[in-house]
Image 1 (spheres, rainbow, N blue to C red):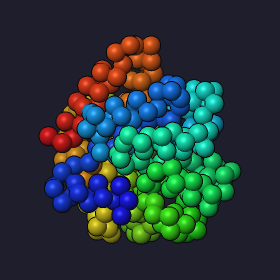
Image 2: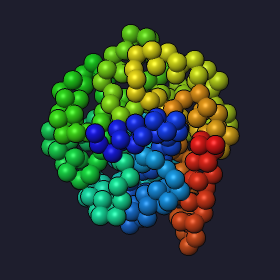
Image 3: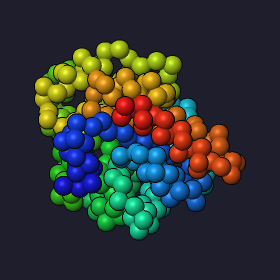
Length: 265
């Protein structure tokens, strides 16, 4: 098992909830990548979802779209992201899930992208816009290299589609709590519990929930009705707002930890 699978199994065995944090690689600066990930680890995050910036992130809301644009202007490329992760592995074993659109994978070549990801210390890949019906070759190659493959399940996914998606997932299943793009919301969907139970009919993998979670009370509620919480836009926004702050690391750790504590309470 890779780090994602080991961590997911460890948390299930301890009856603990997972906390996954998303960041956009290269935002707010390439130089801050290592400090950001280490800060997330210090704050108690279990898995870090590292976003590969892409020029047309149609599944993301304005906060992550803006961060992707900043990262691209900073010269961030998929190869550089993998180099940074390789450097991170000198100091950290925190599980890393690479979040990417399919175009960067295709541009690098599927086999090459997967091989280089595994060599760099990536533990899994979430390819947000690759339909599960077209993912057989990708999934097979990723698993050959020991990488977890995570796919999204939407609130509108039929039970037949849920069955197909969960068959291709390893590590965990990602349930998006609401339709639309990523972004912070004032409240969270109230039907998460029912949908998670439907998903669990088709898999023994843990089900983690993301989209719209930005407050400790959100994290606490979602953790109560699922196996884990995923937060992204709130952290990306925080990093953008504090990019000129000499105390950003301390404040970031405190903010992230407040949501971690909410999820694990």
